[in-house]
Length: 143
Image 1: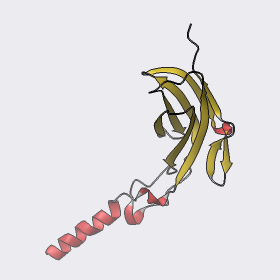
Image 2: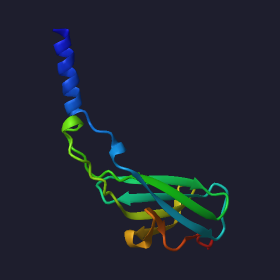
Image 3: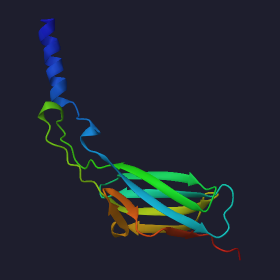
Image 4: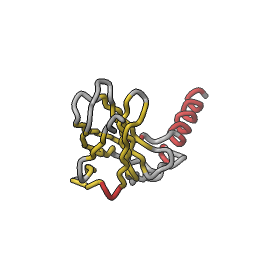
């Protein structure tokens, strides 16, 4: 009797377990740029990558020590997986792509400059997306 009960629970777990996200690879977006103007200690740059899925994104923050920056934003390409999962699962769809990326220069919780780049501004180099031209964020001059 115990064996049957264990077998039933094991079978149900296999049928209704969620498949791992390992079915889809991770992709990378490199964003590079520089800061023009007076850089102060504690200034930071925030990059937000928005994917073509609802509420899916990747974000990173760099505290600047020099006026150049490079972001390495990794994201999952998983765009759909079977709600049933387990042994009955259909193949996952792995076609999530970036829609846009925004980069902000921040000083003491205040945005000094921001740039948004679209999907067409990213070049695909052997499966890795990079911005075609370096971004330039400018520190506004003091009045």
